[in-house]
Image (cartoon, rainbow, N blue to C red; front, side, top):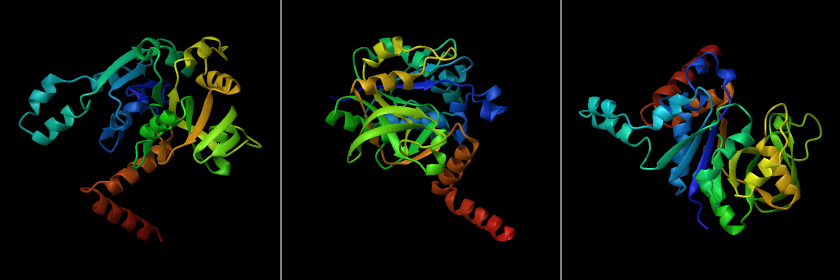
Length: 286
């Protein structure tokens, strides 16, 4: 079954990037000249999914503005083909719709806003601040995994042992290649992590997740998607899948900085010049 829809929750206030995020949602902070969220939307579209639902939190109206065509700006750059094409390519002819989570009531509540959009179909979900670079789009990898084994999928990668306290770490029971059966997720374990496999912002969610979210108790006013997924794990309805690719945590300053450096080095018009600049800095420091 080909997955046709994707959901991107854009919650959180981005406090680690204050003061910029006082006015600009963290999801559209740029990597050089392109918003983080634009790369995520591109990944989804290149995975063969053209129906996308972006869930906006309070103060995230600028995201909708970015993905809404601006005819006046297009007219202003009509005589500059490169700029005109950049504007035309933002949506890549995808059907991008928006929902609103009026109060910050957690990731589970955010996903509930997509229920009418997804209906009774499985759908991919991407966090709005997890940027993944890979030869085969991470979303496509999970979509193809779903075709082979139709259950809710948590996208995971192995992280360093000293970093397991930063992530939700899965509790594995058995492994078959990249497929990992699991019985729980431990949030940011400080000691004795059950594995080094961390949930990293890519999922395939099945429609029964909504019923589990409805039965999930709020913790400090928030309904957490992870809690609902753990309940599904106990019912044998979830597995993890180790996707390929390099992941940048764009909600973290160091993650955002490394993404900017790596992307600049890969850009044909910037790479050689920027590499020389970095080499000169390192030489002078020595």
